[in-house]
Length: 416
Image (cartoon, rainbow, N blue to C red):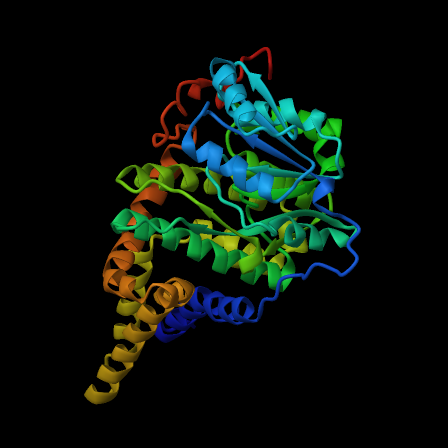
């Protein structure tokens, strides 16, 4: 018969075993170094950049840093309305390695499918239009592809540090820090990654040019009722798993890109969009496709199952109540110190994933209470996201929702 102490111990192990093991895995993770005589070089890489922009400063800076990495070619894919300014931007950079394409509507999957058939190199890198690359990033991205079974390689991602960062910049930086921690740990343990982020990710071109991939990519359905055109990076990551390809993340300074997130309350809308994507993709991986249970058991527990966890505030309160009930008859001093130690451990566990950020920016430790509060608040975002999974709006980027109706299209009875 289970006592309150047994229930407490089970919950403690379920929640904190992954924290402890992931810490060890993250701190001992090592990237795959480039070989002395690589079989792939930057000239084997084509970069595809889907964009809604025409001549924005962010897009220009992205293309310039990509050019410095010396890929074979860069393919920009915008919408028809922005084709002319995007082409003018390409010409202003005076490079013969840039080509520009367009599609009628803002739809990242369709934009990617417009460019992928144009790729003539062995490796395709997909990049967002607001990233800054280090000069030698391609050498490090290509290193894992020396393995013949390697299908996709992700990167380390950090936020551009504003001159005067505000609380929204702080929360955005912690989001990326937490993500880097989790995927480096699970990659080290069993190669699992719930999503190879499309901010910058590399794939073998023949995988993306496979007609079966193209059909699946453009005919994904949610709940058999909606054609889904959002969550493109989640789909490709699941495709790697379902087709036996290995994935890896090069978590290191040499493969560390810089990106932007909203530095205002619109950041909450970004969190809502990411949460919806996680729900849709992780539920599909766990319940429909199910391959992760065999191929990536640790990641299934540490990443995917976490999607189903109750809000952090509920979990914390439940742990404290169970501990109180289980120890209420202990001597007063022993009870007090046990509760204090539990509270300290709960606090420390919330900081461990973020240590890298606080080591780089010790002044941000003053905002630690904000991080903890937001962790609790995010439970509400996650719950609301679950109740609105048929919504795909960005809600944060200008022009991004003009064609939102094309991201999730309800199927007619005839299509079914």
